[in-house]
Image 1 (cartoon, rainbow, N blue to C red):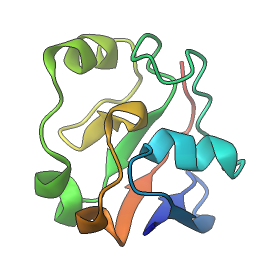
Image 2: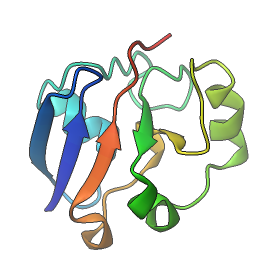
Image 3: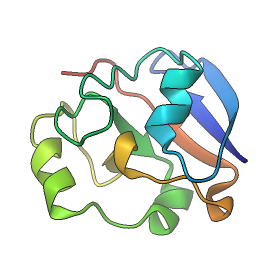
Length: 106
């Protein structure tokens, strides 16, 4: 398990134990964290699981792949900290990661 802190756009925090081997998106969906729609179920085909990775963790999550970069074109308010949470696999090294949710998913 790794602790993941999801911070809603309004500042509400959800600290969740997410199983290693799953994704940041799966942790949010299974624990009903508001703000991650995950319309495609994690297939990297919709960009409705857009998150902003806390700057302290961005190096550990790695860079988005080409498919993810293409899908981020459909997300609103993309920054260098933007990732699709379905593409971030939870590892022991990510224990304590913080992600922020955008105001809306489109």
